[in-house]
Amino acid sequence: MAETLRDVADRHGVRIGAAVAADPLRTDYQYRDALGEFNAVTTENALKMGPLCPSEHEYDFRDADVIVDFAREHDMYLRGHTLVWHNQLPEWLLPWQYTDAELRRLLRQHVRTVAGRYAGTIDAWDVVNEAVADDGGLRETPWLRAFGEEYIDRAFEWARKVAPEATLFYNDYGADAINDKSDEIYELLSGMLERGVPIDGVGLQYHALHDHVDPVSVAENVRRFSDLGLDVQITEMDVAYTAATAPPDRREQQAEYYGEVVERCLEAGCDTFVVWGVADHHSWLPHFDETLTEDPLLLDDGYDHKPAYDAVRDALE
Ligand code: G3I
Image 1 (cartoon, rainbow, N blue to C red):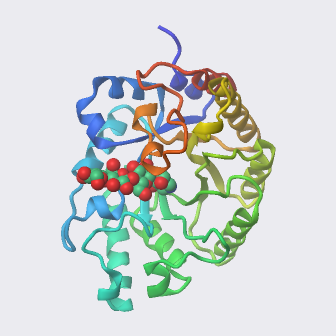
Image 2: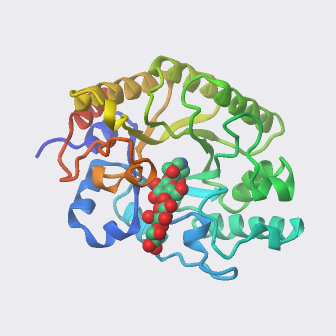
Image 3: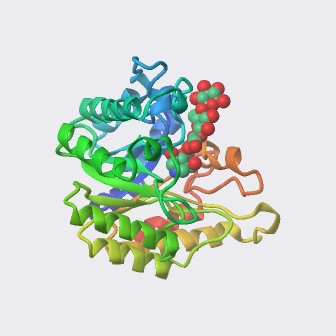
C-alpha cells in the first residue's frame, strides 16, 4: 500500500487538509476514501451563516455534523469556516431591515451559538473572514455598519469565551505575499494583539488563479506573521491558469508551484496546508470564473494522483 499524504504529514508533524462538502461525504465512497490522504479538514460551506440558518430562529447543523463526525471518527484536525463573513448570509437577513443594535445582538448570538456548540470539537475557527477591502481599509459589510471596526475584536472575544480551546484565526485572500493588503492585515492583527484581543493565527487562503505570486515573498509574509507570535496556515490553496493561455505543460508547472510553495512556507514556520477541495471536479472555480482551467487541486476528477500530489508529498517529506 503506497504511503498517503497523511502518512508523510503525520510523520513530520504537519497538517495536509482539504475543504469538505457534506453531500459527497454522504454519497460518494471514492470521496470518503480520498479523504484518507488528509489529516485535516475544513468545512467548505456547512458552517457559514447562510447554510446554517434557514430562518432567523432556526439552525440546521446536519451538514456540519456530517463533516464534524467524519473528522472526529478519523482523528482529523478540524477547521470551522467561518463565523463572521459578508458572503453566504441567510436570504432572510436583509441588514437594512434591522437596527444596528439588532444586528449586533444577532451576530453575537450567532457566534456564541455556533462556536459554543462545537467547543472542544472544532480545533480552529476562521472567526472573521475577508474583513479587509481589496483597495485598503475595512470592507463595507453589514457588520462594519452595525458595530464600526470593533466587530472584529468582539467576534474573537465571543468565540474565545464559548470555545476556549479553539485556535482563533483571521482568514483572507490576496494577502499571501508581501503586498498592500497583507500589510493592512499585518497592521490590523498587530493592533488586535496590542489590545489583548484573543487572536491566535492568520489564514492565508492562497487562491493562485490567473497570476501566481512569488513563493519567496509568501515565505517572508509567513515569517513576519509568525514573528508576531501567530500561527500561520495556508487555508484554501488551489492553483489554476487562464485557460486560453495555459502552458501545455501546465500540470507539471502546477506541480512545481505547489511544491515550492509548500516547501518555502514549511521553512518559514507554516505547519498547515489546506487545499480547497478534495478532487478537481469538486472545485468551486468553474462556478466562479470560466476563463480558468478546471483542475486546480491535487487529485484529478477520477481521484487519481496528479503531478501536484507528488510534488506536495515530496515537499512535505
Ligand atoms: O446549496 C445550494 C443549493 O441548494 C443550490 O441548489 C445551488 C444552486 O444555487 O447553490 C448551492 O449553494 C452554493 C454553495 O456554494 C454550495 O455549493 C452557492 O450557490 C455557491 O455560491 C457557494 O459557493 C461557495 C463560495 O465560497 C461562496 O462564496 C463555494 O462552494 C466555496 O468553495 C467558496 O469558498 C470561499 C471561502 O468560503 C472563502 N474564501 C473564498 C472561497 C472561494 O470563494
